[in-house]
Length: 149
Image (cartoon, rainbow, N blue to C red):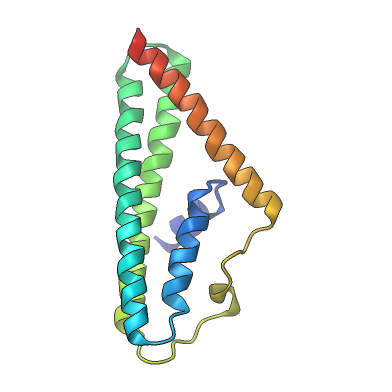
């Protein structure tokens, strides 16, 4: 599962930047009470992301099942697979967040990378935003067209 998480984290998707800040707030908490509060906030946000990605997965499946054409089917498959992967990744992150919060007593030893919110350059972030936005525009335009037929 860790290898899947590393692979999925390398994809140019912009949701990871918000998730990284929530995870960093848990890791960088000063005391146990703050860590628990940040853990709950992180988990609630991840649950919201899971619900939204699950809905998008269902929309991708609807597009696959509609008889619109090969391009629409391919777009639906890509959209469904990416959103299913996002759901799986976020469920794993909930597990890691709970595990970290429960097991860490006092000062937890982390690397400097964990303390940093931003691992990527501005160019990579811009590419991730562009890829996510372009993918959403392509999917929504094809999905709306399929619904109108």
